Image (cartoon, rainbow, N blue to C red; front, side, top):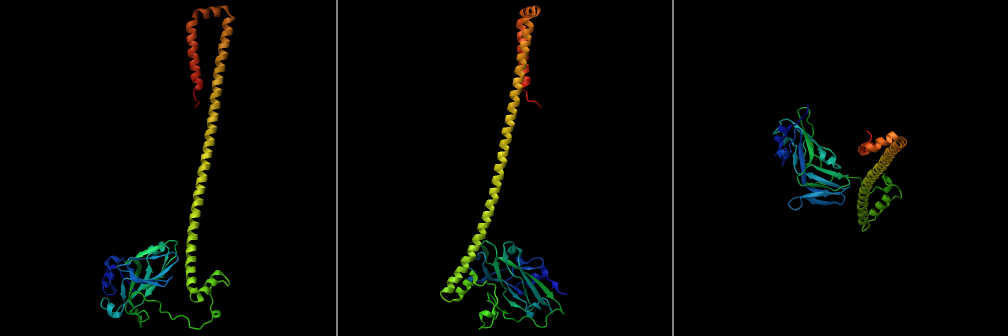
Length: 326
């Protein structure tokens, strides 16, 4: 049964099966391949080489780039048998999760037993932002299985990419020459702008240059449109929040005015009731005193201290009336 190599096994492969390998790239059950020096921007066909002058690449939104691994893999039997006698190695390569988190789409692939060379991949930036990658940055994870006797293939890999190092363009032979347009099925809508643009590109020099430029501009316009839509959604969200805050402020102001008006009316009523009660009390006392000789004589003899008592009573009543009820 095939055995998944662990970290201690992977360290044995450094320098031989994994040429230019780094021990810090070894994980519990995989090795992290790094970005190599050579590649090509597929949207423009421009090749690049990283090193002393160029430290990294910038991939615009919607663009694709072909990249290579810094490491070189050697799954040839003469190399593998020095470490694992009688066994072959088979690898699965997949992008790190960092790429998918940033909207970078990269296909997974396999490394067949017997392969020797530099792995190549294509990554596509499907996000709406430019993404940057530096030379020797960790991008791809290779998981290696050891194939024991009975699992090894009869014929090991010997394809077009065998012993190829650095960046290698696709070796696919493609369609035969001479096929008519009517023999092709495509996604373009007849008479649509995409079909007109493709016809412009097929018109030859200098129109094909203009057509390619228009395709780039179209992609950039789509990116700007998406960014504008995001900004508009954010503004609408903020506007809704501001309107909600204003509405709450208006409700609070209305409630405060209502409470102040109610409290003012209650305070005014209490003062009116208190003043009316005092006035009515004094009137009743006056009528009583001035219609009774004995009461008038008593008031005349004890007027000074009765006046002080009445003032104190008035003050007490005023304080009681002005107190806010609980």
